[in-house]
Image (tube, rainbow over the protein chains, first blue to last red):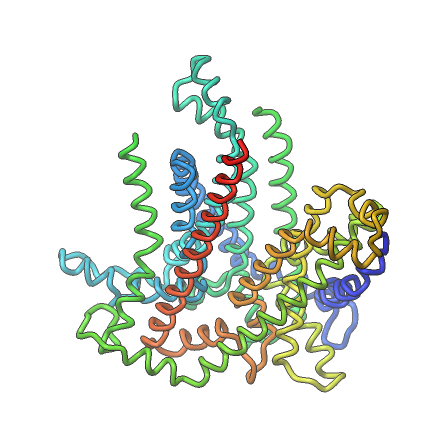
Length: 269
Length: 269
């Protein structure tokens, strides 16, 4: 048990398959095709700032919508008896176990001009509306795919909140809304924070949802990276530079979120 | 309030399940239409099972998931033991690197591994395929095993191992008879996580698979790119059914064992 060597196989694996690949991303980002040092590719990323802004914007909207839907839902779930809670939670999480390509494909077929939604609207004399290949469809796909990632962490923090704290709040004169705002919300903040990161990170870097639901016109950072490595635009150095910038953005956001979590959480308490 | 929350819950479940049910319904459609049911047929299921590409990639997916999750579990458990005995600074460094594949967007992990494999493929004369996929799947699985096993050591009495040796176990016996049963829940949940993530992974597989060896999600993706085929609907229906059966069984077993625990406790009282 005191033998540290037992970790050696993993340490070798970790260096070769986690550390070295990341270093290679950095290497390719700062070199040109001949392997000479250059800042060109990192500077080139600025050309795509519009795509970065769009990705951050759409991912942020999706995250907010997920939060707005999930928070009341998690609260409602904690009100059920224990057995009902676990059953309900299973029912809510079940769609997540389907591959996300299939879930996105489902929306692709439903949102199309000849899709089922437009057909139903047609019966009432509305439409057809262009729903597929819009930014709205991309946001919808993000919300649909990542909603459980928001529900689960919020629920698991909320369910641990001591019921007597809530009772104490109402005994001391809080009405139900005030109890939620002043007691439940601050206590559930860690769950909200991890929910936000769990939705935002995959949403900002997706390339499937944007491609299947957004058509060609709504490129996101993920599409841009994919195009440099496997697409027509093949340019490994630029792809590495974009990946590096994406990584930095996400690390920054996570640092900010952690900051917020520690400080404000404590202040609010 | 009670009624309102039930309506809300119903709406969210409606949102989560309608796309899946639409997929399922149209898997029985006689035509390729996605809006009008023209008749009932099992044709698409028969076509699905005769589709060699799908069957082959399904087989690939299962083999890779089994090998990757078992390897990752052994590698990760051994690593957790070693890391647990490390000094503070090396431990922090190793854990930070281990966390990288978890916090990093999947696309960056996929791209970084692809860069590594491209580099070696050119020099060592191998092609993208089974082995690159397997290595990638092990790489993104091990961190989850480590993160599941590490907390178990914290919960375990550190002197348990020494006590076992004092009572006559050699170090191998002490590990397999005393330590391993203690950390087993963590090892098992790490294994289950690795297995399901491996089955479900698309993004990393997409960047590390070759043309001759693909996993099911990668095949599904290329199917959705081509044209609409109700075979995808049939496949979704089967996957959904499998997921439902597995989750319900898991829930029933868990509840039974919990009830048994309660019973045993009750008898003691």
